[in-house]
Image 1 (tube, rainbow, N blue to C red):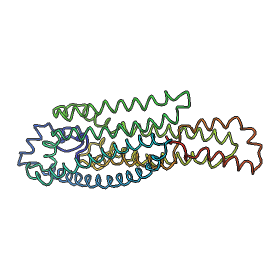
Image 2: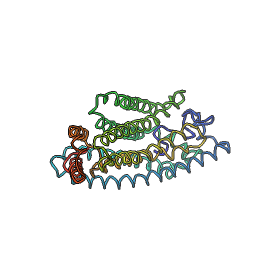
Image 3: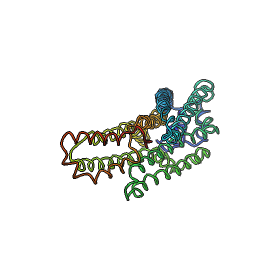
Image 4: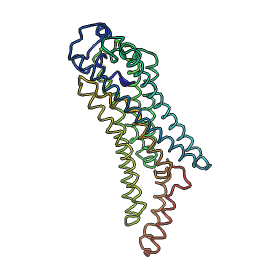
Length: 366
């Protein structure tokens, strides 16, 4: 909804954002019936309404981008579904991408429902305006909990997919368990914090507790931290394999350069999501008297979907790391000395052969 998944910084909410926003449910009700709202509070409420409506528009815009990418992904997966060797992986990929767009669609519908109810049908019901109505009425509605669960499920899905790809990269090493333990712990922590947020959303009086702000900050902070850690570990692994490949062949090749391309793909795909999440954390943590963070929060779900679809699309196009690639590199080690003594023509032929072995034409990508 336009107030964010944790009633983030609405003036009438009781999240600990600023001195004047520490309002309980009863205080919020009093504000709704009070005819003497201070002018400074009125100005802030009007500013919050502007941010609220703008965030809804931005949510719609980013959803349009996500839905377009979903169509492109489905079109790319359609060709892989026709290949028996890739059918299972393509079907699983189609399943979780479809679930992601369903979550984003529910998020969009609930956001526009809340805007319509607060700004069209009940704008003048309470003197505080739509922001007050959202807090007193909409955030107490059972549908808000459903919306919240879909938002959290999308977070957990994207984190799980990231961890799965990390495991694919590191599973050929003896350290894969140690590498994945921290991301898995963060995923479990995210689930626990999500449950706490869901409990708070059904017990409005709990919002006045001191830990509310910490829970909200943790709720928004764990996913980007996980993304940064997982991406860094992926880049580290690819960099090590690229260096080993160069040492094996003796000079840089097109195959070695492919690792650089995969690294760039990971950074490009997750950069927007990471920067967006950092903006949420900063605007949420400064405890501004306005709800400027809602601009980033409302569209954050769609940004996660966009990052996910960018990766899936490149996987579907055969530009991603495969589960058996590391074993193929290791199989070249026995021919290292012989390959280094070949003539230029023989080396070119060998590199072309290796390039075919690395191609994703007949292998299911991870």
